[in-house]
Length: 311
Ligand code: GH3
Ligand code: MG
Ligand code: MG
Ligand code: MG
Image (tube, rainbow, N blue to C red; front, side, top):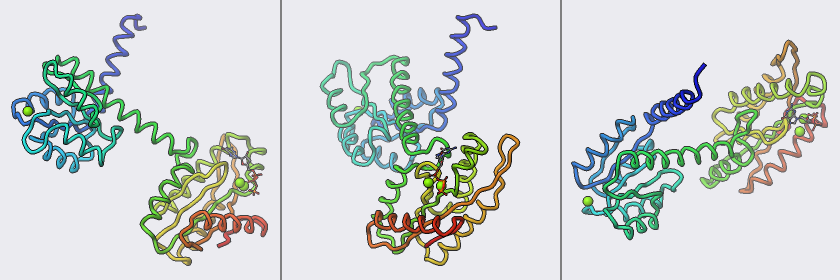
């Protein structure tokens, strides 16, 4: 039993400890031409477990930022030789969005015009000197949490909740990015579980869900060098690249065989099922056309008795 007041303290402390644990993975870059200021600010940050980096002007700041992908926050002064803080923020925003790297501009006492310039050039926040440690850490934590929340939302928007595979949206984003590099050979394979309705009807929806997760794992293993996603329902889609028709056929057949041989176990029950695959490597720059052919081939596979690949 923990008394109510103690429970609140306990809750606060455990959140604080979690935060400090997470901070060990997070890089913070301090950009300032004064060595004394840099070492004071980084010492403060290290007390909260952050990994710290330093740069003495905007130009060096950009270089250090590009070298370390763990940097999620930049705290910058304005007046520095070579490149000012505001100039550096404007420049880094060409590469890093506000959701990837947060920037806090440090402005002098009563200099609200500078605070506004920081925000306009792309800083997430500003802090005015002199500041107390409590305000400093409130702003640092708030900005870090903003970055983390956006990353979590992005991941959720791109991931299928049941199987943890990339979802259809992410599939097309990735495929389109890859197609921009003009690959020589491109193949899409649509995979559909056979008579899956029977699995649900016979063993229950939960057993069906479990079987979908197992199938996703098998497919991820077979297509680990390619790109597999859950397209919806009991349907998956694979984007194969950097191969040829024969090796793609072999790979797809192996995946089909393993699913057919796998004993799905759930809640004391055990069952098996098969998959049908429609694939196509007829690609003339239009991915949708290739997918349409793959889909037609899937239909043919179903028509010809299921548990087979039509390429
Ligand atoms: P076919 O061989 O022609 O593909 O037959 P089928 O029964 O697999 O196809 P149909 O499209 O008739 O049924 C698909 C079934 O997949 C119906 C639906 O309940 C089930 N299903 C779709 N998504 C999920 C899911 O997330 N979990 C579970 N348990 N079942 C799902
Ligand atoms: Mg200065
Ligand atoms: Mg099906
Ligand atoms: Mg289906």
